[in-house]
Length: 364
Image: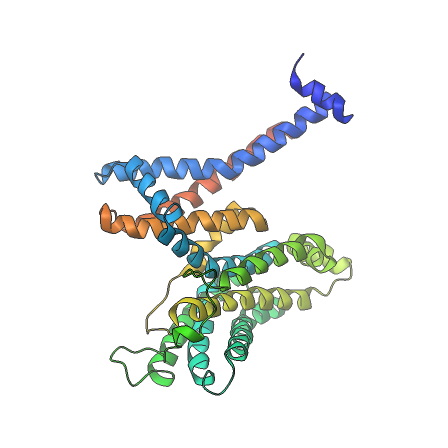
């Protein structure tokens, strides 16, 4: 006697239903893991073409990014801004809005934070300075998203174009602010004043990991709860799934669209504040980590699920931190991590297409 029917009987479910549920779980796991495995395999072929042993590379990356004390601190620290951006993108994508302007929102909020922190720290308590910086950074991100929101609500203009346009403008505007308004005359390189290390976010347990990671983890979990367990989140999902149905249901689609843009971009802006208050303390001209577009495939791989997003962001942070070290030790270019992200996107799309075809065949 097989185990599945026995388990089905023990739970009071028909064996066919249990088998169908098992296949659904297996398909969901495959959709999660297949793009990663395929990207790593193809990435290994690329490493071989570059003359590098892929097994040695992957082993070194994991050991450096995950199993060394310095590496795990760098990995967790790197996760903080990525998670804040991911929280913002989850809100937008679940509501059916393509906020691809995260880089501009992130950088503008980072520059304003870097200018505001050193200016306030002498006259206000540290905690109040940090709170004000966070509030202003969130507002900066939200305000920068109002133009795409207005264009979408008023004229129905696709937000992919408008958010990308505002992102380029935001990056350029941030550089202008650094070079002309907020520059520190005491430095030879254009940059803002520097927030002293002792005035930045508190460190955790004597490590270099700052408390911004706790804020970022809380943001992702709260966003997941709000989007999956509250009526407000359900309304956003309905607007994203079918705007016409949302109108017939009496929802204020315009207001919810503005709210989605503001919340999403506000969270991205908080990511900029976390990175400046936790790590850098200042912003140099032409600095742009380009976290926004890097996080997009991770959020899609996680299917907009909060816990899965945390896992994928950690996976990516390990790749980044270990990859940076491998670039020095093994001579693999740092942009190889970006190649892996591109491969992830390609195989994610391929797996989604094959899964769609499988479902069509099953229904027919």
